[in-house]
Length: 343
Image (cartoon, rainbow, N blue to C red; front, side, top):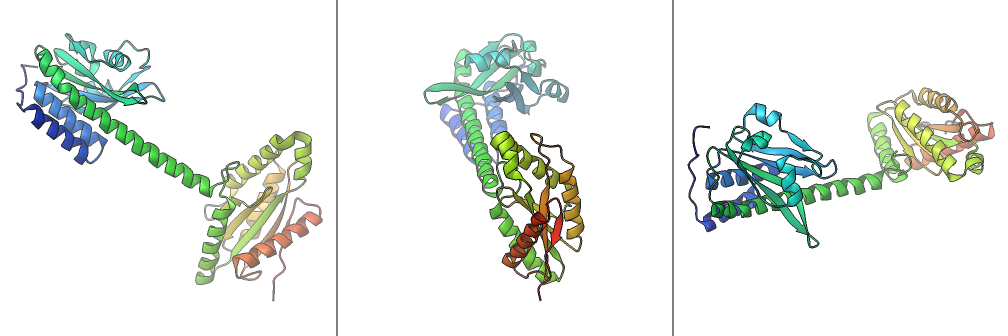
């Protein structure tokens, strides 16, 4: 670096107004951090800069944004691992939650082309406890600015911390919403669609089959001797048998098929097209080849009903498939029975 970068003079009020606008109006977190980093660099005359965010789950500082940092330096400094123990100056700032003035910027890899550096922690307070969320780092071609100037830049780091905290909260809210949505539509034991979702899918598939005049099959599969498996190994063994069957079904059905857990030991396959019986027979054979649980073999009784021959509504198809499944069970299990066509 050839010399100090010209500072852009702003009053404290102007600087804070620009920073607040960056946080309030920025398109996303990267945009907000880029604007705040730029404001800090301009106000202090920094040549280069970077912002890191702490990934607390992996104890790692991850590079979020850079300012006039070379590609090679950025690529070689994309993260600081083991932040709770690392001797990296940026990790020291995270642990201490205090600004760090560095006379030799070579100690901070991403700022090694600078002469001196300043690292500001991004800190928020949660339940009375200060929590570090990241670091804003600035590199200077010459000596560090005055202490007063450095202190004046700290509110920019505070606003950057607010931006990070808000982004984390929004992300957590989105993850929670996704989790609740998934919980509402899936069976927690097997990960398959639950009965509520199955009912919705069946309504849609029957309507589509009716509109397009194409066949659709509904197959109900029930574990044979499920109570015997539970007697041999308790609920744990029963759950294991259900999970094994669910995994095989999920991995074996065609992309056009849908699979769901229908009852305690029952599953349903929705198979568009004319090959429902072939699909059901292949699945029954695959389940019979699963390893035993608590010395008990795993098999299913399956009943299949076809649209429109065995029913034209979801209720009619389910009733026909259930009747056929009972026939398969009464015949000894481990087999598929087809519903008789209704007149």
